[in-house]
Image 1 (cartoon, rainbow, N blue to C red):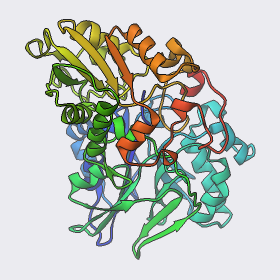
Image 2: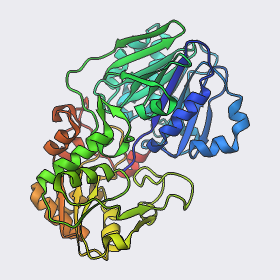
Image 3: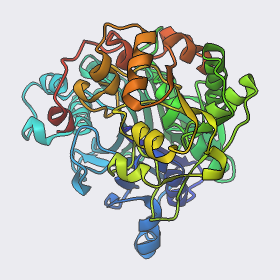
Image 4: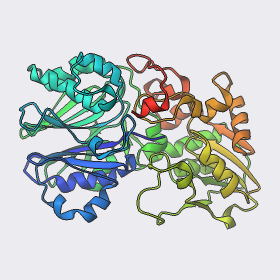
Length: 478
């Protein structure tokens, strides 16, 4: 399971160089993607590199130090709809550097390319398989701008063909910073203010603002366009929808624990989800252990409510090589990443363990942890903060095909939760397994379930403009 990227943009009203701001913000958003990163400022070609931000800053400091501008955008990437190459790294230049309507764009999300291609009415210059969803959105917007439409009018006209998720930052030829969020709000996007440099900042998560010493002003609303130029900031909507579809995975796994999304602190939500799991599954045990790292707050919440002591029974080796160890989002085999988790034998041997994890996708890592890492435990009960994943995601998460999803492969879609728990527990090799359900997850997060997207659980894609056909993994990767 991989999530599609993080974005940031900054505009200093007093002319301060925002390049250090954008780079520091990207480092704070690195958990959202580690394949490549990039930054764009006026009068310079976009600077893009593979790998993580800190490596490039260390090795190419002098080149990066030459970049300067009071406005710019940046991006960290994990690919979901195109190959992981430097060519596909963001920001992307749309329209050519000499055109008054050209712009650079960085995108977090996934859009249906076939629908966008139809919207462009055959004006795509390359094979559909060689053009990313971001490029197609950019071409569509550029076409509207050339016809004299404003940015709001351009998004409004293209919106019927934007099937999926997009939280986007744009740097225009007129030196404007634009932030846009799709009408359903699948992916997060927030607005901040940095007093020292008098800068407006737009970022995927508020954790970037915290690192920069900026103040979180608010979330950018679904369907909203925020534009910043030398005269300040203006806000308009290209679409308004009463029902939103925020991704619950942001709260259980993807987002940084310090971030606030839709007014809810991610850490607090995760801890509260653990409390709801304790109410749903009041198990007997000697210790509560998290699978590091995203399940730690949930394990603390379960311990709070159940009274069972919390123990760090599993630890990650963070110094084996450079890079983060987020196993779903790291461009590495899941087995390789999980091999860097070590059990603390003195803490787990002979114990009845209540193990907390955020989710199960293929189930590979869960089997490794329970069969190898916790082999000295007396008994292992596994609880998941996320419900059974039965269907592909078409809003920015790179799930495998439906046939590779463990819950679907083992149980199909006809069994109730108790049967799924039993069958998956047997497959994983644990004494007991308990998935969260939609109601419990919604209650733990603190958002109504009709404001969250559960299409990967229910198969109901009504939150999208039209139901997508299931695709093979190869098709989803192109």
